[in-house]
Length: 315
Image 1 (cartoon, one colour):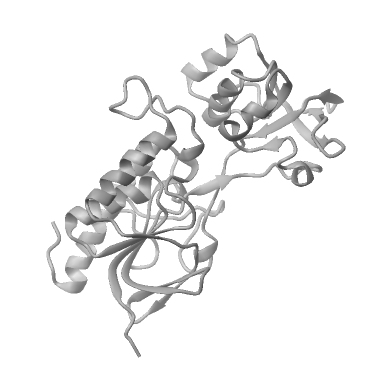
Image 2 (image 1 turned 90 degrees about the vertical axis):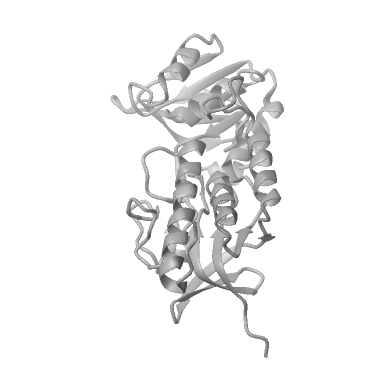
């Protein structure tokens, strides 16, 4: 029987955090492998324009930025396979990673860079009408709503950015937020307030999304008075936060109350030899630049850890 190869490092996820970790790992000379269930990029592939990533004074699209990162990692020798990770188990100080395909990978260390996905609202009609007017991606679906009235739910920077993108297509956009003020960056708030297509509905929430075969409207509840009203629209875009992709380590590493991975300042999880970075990690700012910094640090700390375990100096 052929002995399973033991990698120095397996990186789970090929978004900004995972690709940066791969770049740094290759420069350290580590024998590593990246596992990604879809195409490299993750959530950033859905971002039409990034204006706050250093080095791009005119901004850059998410797909363009990821393409450059991927090319850089591949030029350095990054190896990657399209696999969805289902489980990690420990065996004699090694990590055994089991993929959906049934294939297993053995490694001294793991970097979790598996990212997060959009949260669902959890109201009646959402699941049934997803793909029929309910969306979580403006870049993907905005062209379907040209000259129509649509509704956006959320109050953070993502909701603001997606709303502004939707104004290129829709005739009218209602932005519904539970609070009396937005959490989005000030520059985005100013753009929203100055856009005639956008009407903000404060201190309200969506109770129900309805329609026969496609979205026709929502039932809104005014939170202070409890008043209900129907609002007609042909699309509902939901941007209320992220849910981390941590199903494969729920009973292994320590998670916070929202399911994000807890780490120390060196990106180390509660399990020795397993690190985490990017949107899957418990942090206060989910941005590409933060994910890249964390990916770099995680790879560096893997090198430090392996120096102790294998007695080889990685610099």
